[in-house]
Image (cartoon, rainbow, N blue to C red):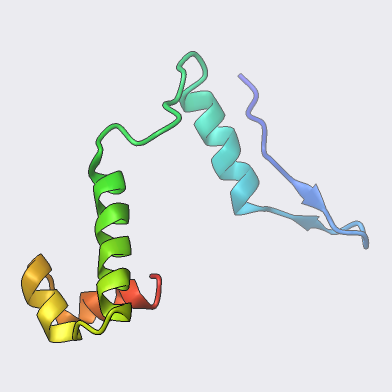
Length: 86
């Protein structure tokens, strides 16, 4: 059984292996006969998106980082990350 090695060639003609192509190929083999969901299986992501928007709005309205951390039960560091959109 032959294996296909994904490869790409630079303009100079030299061989280079790209991780993105390898991952795409592997996923296409693993999920060949399966339909992948278009959205996350849980609503958790949407809830956090809503929560993060609320945190940004409350901060813009004058609420402090320690107050936000306490209200949402998260660390001050996490509030700063949310405010920086990470």
